[in-house]
Length: 146
Image 1 (cartoon, rainbow, N blue to C red):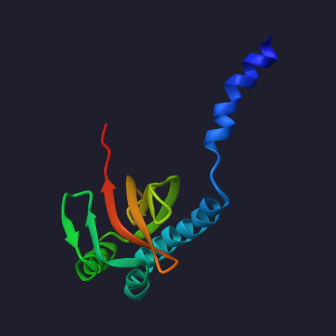
Image 2: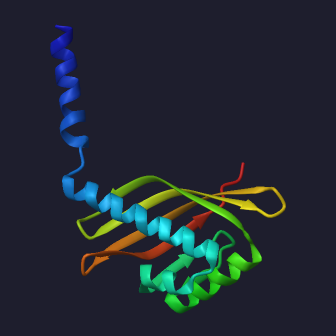
């Protein structure tokens, strides 16, 4: 009886929680885009940023400032990285596929600052797949406070 109950309880979990092979491949590509974003932010690489953004990207930073369009977003990011130096860690916590061409990514965003403190943020990204390549279309940075 226990086995039968366990069997019926696990079928929905196993049957509906698996991701497809295509989503596994896309997850690897999406993680690479997020890693490229982190690298570009640390090094101020505007060329790399431009290559991973859609032209109409928008970003809401933790201070409440909006950056609209690739040029404004990149300019703001480069200035912000210069004003807030430190190593960055973006740890992808979750990828939710909204369709085969749209994914939402939630990540922990940690910045080890020059003064020894650490900023603990959350970032959400919307990525779209265009011509077989994943690009960042939107970024939302949050600074949760106790």
